[in-house]
Image 1 (spheres, rainbow, N blue to C red):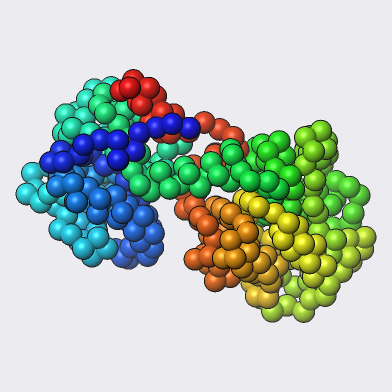
Image 2 (spheres, rainbow, N blue to C red):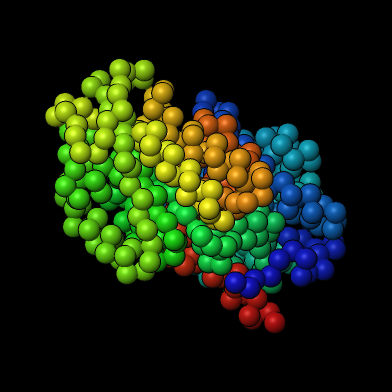
Length: 389
Ligand code: ADP
Ligand code: MG
C-alpha cells in the first residue's frame, strides 16, 4: 500500500488542514475518554516542529447537516490544550496557530461528499493531512473529496494504524491466528468469511462459538445461540477447509444457572449441558489449547471477548488469553493487533492494553478492514499519491 506521509512534504510554514476524529465520548459536559485526542498529539507535535499553522477538521455526533448547539465542538479547545499542551483556537477567526473548526457535519456537504464544500475547506490551507483512520470508512468531503483538490497525506496516527493492520492481515508473518468472539455471529459473518481466507487458525469463543457448536450438533441449553445461523456456520467451516484454515472451537465451557456476576458455575464439556444452564465463558482445557496455538504463532488478530467479561469471574477466559498474548508480544515472538468497542474494554479490564503491539480504537473502520472492505478514506490517500507523483 503506498500513500504519502508527512515526511514526503516540505511543510515548513505551511497551513495544514488536519482531519482528526474528535468525536469523543462526553458525559455531563466532560470528555470521558481522551484516547482519540491523544492519538493525534504526535502529528500536532510534528507539525509544530515544522512551524505549521494547523486547521483541525472533525465531525461530532450526528447533527444531520444542520447547525445544532448540542453538537457544537466549541467545548473542545480547552480539552485539546490540556491534552496537547498548546493553545487551540476555535473557528477560522481565532488568532491561535492551531485552530479547531466547528463540527463539519453542520454542513450537509460533508456527508454528501460535496465538491463545493470540499473546495471551501481546501481553500483554507496548503496541504491536507488525514489522521482519522476511524472515519476512513466514510466517503465524506473531509475524508475523500478534499484529497482530489490538494496535496494529501497520512498523519502519524493514520500511518501507524495502516502499518499495524497491514502487518496483521495483508502481509503477516505466519502462522497467523485470528481470535474472534463476542455476542452474535450474525454481526460478524463478513469478518469470519474474510478471515478464513487469510489466517491459519481461526479461534472462536464467546456467544458465536455456541452457534458453531450448535451447528455441529452440540446442545447449548439457554446459551446465547443464533440457531438460524446454522447454515452460515457450516458454510464458513467449508470455506475454512478449502482455504487451509483450521477453526478452533471450545472443548469445554463455563455454565451458570443465574445470569449474574459471581453466579454459581461449573466447568462442563461440549457434549452435555442442562436445559436451564447457559455457557458464559470458555473453560480451562480450551484456554490451554489456545495458549498452545498462540505459542506457535507469529501474528495474532483479535476481535471480540471470549465470554461475558462484564461479569466476574466470566472474564477469566478473555483475561487468560489476553495475558498470554501480552507476554508473547513482550518477549518479541508475536505481533498482536486487536480492535472493537467491547474488545478494547475487555483487554483494558485484563490489564493487557499496553502490551499489545497495536490496539485499534477505530470501531467501524476497523471492522470493515477485517471484513476485507476497501476504506474510501484510505483509497483516497493512495490515489492522491498517484496523482501528485
Ligand atoms: P466488539 O464490540 O469488540 O466487536 P462484540 O460487540 O461482538 O465485540 O461482543 C461483545 C459482547 O459479547 C460483550 O457484551 C459480551 O458480554 C458478549 N459475550 C461474549 N461471550 C458471550 C457469551 N458466551 N454469551 C453471551 N454474551 C457473550
Ligand atoms: Mg460491541
